[in-house]
Image (cartoon, rainbow, N blue to C red):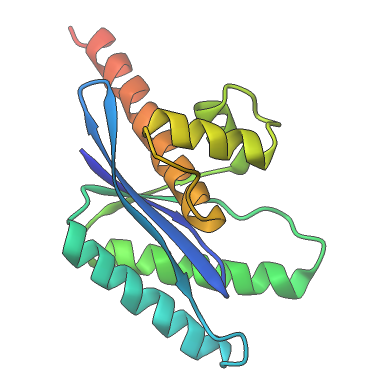
Length: 166
C-alpha cells in the first residue's frame, strides 16, 4: 500500500510518500510545496492543489493521510490552515482516494509511542523508521509522520478485521 501523507500549510505544505510492504515501511519521496506569502490566499490554494495533483499523478498513492487541524491562538491563521487542508483533501478526493485524518497526538503516538513527544523526537523516529540518511525538511518530515501513522493505523484495522471474521 502506498500512502501520501500531507502536513498542510498555507505557506508551506509538506508531503511524504511511503509504501507499506508487509510490516516494512519504505520511503518513496518527500518534499515541500512553497507558496509566495505575498500572493492572494486563493492563488496559494491553487498552487497547493495543483502540486498535490501532480504528486498524486506521479506516485499513484492508494490513500491520503492528512493532519487534522488544531486550535490555534490566532483565528486568522487557523482559517488559512483550514483552507489549505481543504485544498489538500480535495486533491485526494478528486483523484478517487480515501482521505484519512489524524490529530498531532495520534501521529506522535504512532511514530514515537508518546502523544506529547517533541518535534525533534518525531523527526528522529521518522528518519529511523524509514532508514533515511538524514532528517527530512521539517514540513516533509511531519508529512512522512502522518503517512506512518496511517500505515500503523491500517495495520491495526486489518488485524481487527481478521479477528472479527466468522
